[in-house]
Amino acid sequence: MVPFDDRFHEMHEQIQKNKSLVSRVFALSESFDSLRMDEIKRYYPIETTELFHLGLDHSGNHCRFYEEILSKMRILYEESDGKIDLPKVYFLLENRRGILSEDLTGNDYYRLTDRTEFNLLNPVLGKVFQSNKLDLEKTTFQIEGWNYLRNPVIDLDHVKVKPEYEKVLNIYTQHYKNKNNFLIKNFN
Image (cartoon, rainbow, N blue to C red):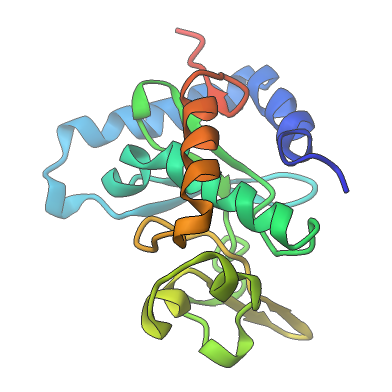
């Protein structure tokens, strides 16, 4: 199994080196400064790459708890031996201006449901989290298209790990607060 951080390393490098993309992402993020909160959507598709689509998550809750969400992803990844479906991109913008992530809708090509029925969830979720059925259903999006079905786990800000995972969650969270390998820096 590829270590969790290594899984994202190459994509992080490619994005960070793409000055044009990084400039566009930060320009979009900065454009929110002039809008009222009720005018700002939580998610904006940005660009299509060869391999997948990118988007900007502007949820304050997701930005505030980014390191904890990333740590929960890592726990799930490790507990599933790398088999759980996670987004290909999930990087925090410098100064917590947003989260650059894989646009799971494929720029609105696929139908996205922000909740997956309990019986379709990866069983590792129940192993790691002490949350109720409804909260677990909210952790996983369901994406459907012609001959396409995917259930990526991404929305982890509202679930709590079971007590036996609290220590490792805290260790990972501190690790990501002190590392920049998931941070997209602005060139300006």
